Image (cartoon, each protein chain N blue to C red):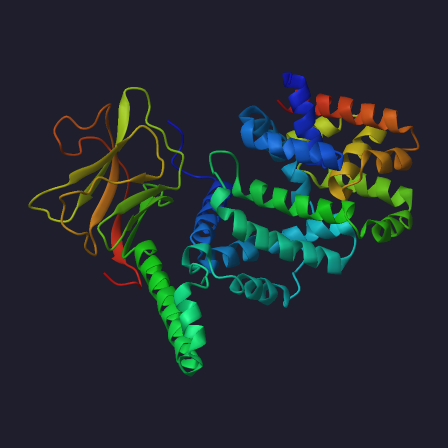
Length: 241
Length: 189
């Protein structure tokens, strides 16, 4: 497909002008043709201002509860228990009508327990126990650091800050003034990244996280040498440490 | 070095991207935030396309269920969260327009005076910021062709419906649209 043909397809797709069959083919193609996906994204961006001109309309107050209720219906995939298949064992249970009521109640209870455990485990694994919002010198949120119960710590970038040629961005944490800041990451540009905290003590409340500008490859001294680009202290979340 | 200061829009985009990550993890607070931020504008866009409040609400409803299901496939490297979410809204609305209820809707369309549509299209252009590249580039198109592009986008009209509105043969309508989109792309790149 030529560049012009691809652009025509992208533009008419975004405008909603394709015939149903062509639209279906275009959507299939989008999944494997990165060039087409970029053109579609560009056209969406070009025309997005038109959507912005629509007068906002207060949604019907009953709408959110309906959406919320529809979400509640299916159990999330990860927590969905394996379908119960009739087995020889089940057939045996079936044959003992005396046991049947008990068996059903017991398996229902087991099922609930399983769902509950999976959900608790998921929540515990997903919710950070500490969060630090790193602010720029202009007091703008520039990144978030999430520390999890298992010690895993991630940095989520909120700015598209890039290190200039010959420089790197270095992430530090400080929990003990005696020991001083310890490097936990080196980046060329802000992006979401898991921080290297192996061997460090578990993060604690008020622990400092900061990003400094350093020579390419990181500070030669092992301590921050350049300007602090953003910093913030960790606060415990409601999950509890 | 790019600036540390995110624009107001940039900050809002980050917040929405974060909300989508929440959705992907099954946390509905993420969807609620998206709903609070986007539902009023989405209802406005859907109403403009479908002309009926009940249908617009239905489209917004389905859109948020789709956002919930597809949140995990949102890739911030490929586009903005608003652009991603509005694409889902537009596709949902177009499916409804092109789907079963369509005959009913066409009746509504016919009741609209072409003159008012023309006025709508012009009002739409006026509503764009003076500094907007899109406005500058739309202004380069002949009025009838500009109207074709705007009606296609904001009303979800098909080539055939546009030809009817503009009083030209189908082939001509298609060629106009094609040429106009080419002009727009060249002007906005």
